[in-house]
Image (cartoon, rainbow, N blue to C red; front, side, top):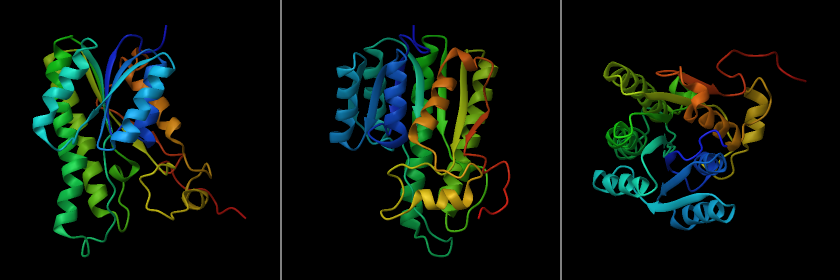
Length: 254
């Protein structure tokens, strides 16, 4: 039996990077997974790979910022059974100083990174309550815990969903509905979210105490923990997966 055997999961932004790794690992551990994204070719390929490996998965084209599409995503998940896991992973990265970033870019980023997560939680909760249990995992960032120059909008968005997760966790606890809500905070992870030409490993060697960039699988394993009963006493919490960056600094290496 897998760690999430027969549970039904939705993974937004599941076509590549951390989302694809989460979808794949949850499926390998027994979950039935609905993958949503705007990248139809890659999203369909992730679902097809899972099915060819013996798992259960389907892909849906979905813009997380469009509320009208959410009922269909929930309905697609409920074809597998009662929704038990949500990984609100879809997000974008827009760098820029506070004085330089345009209002249009600010709104584009916050629409995906905040509104999309809000809608995911809003529509997942009633579905999970029909099954009297669930785990919601919100993908934040180390940038949701500390500030970085040139990342004001991204930091603001990731800090917002961190506290959204905590507030939703308290609402669920007050309701006694057996639904847990936690946030995940990746550090420097080698995924396609970085701008072309970025040397992620060089950055990691300079900034990460463990001296390496993380991989999508490192985050997926943390998500699996939060989705499974192994974390049954954990809600309103932060899982930081950053190679030690939030913990402190180490002496410069030769």
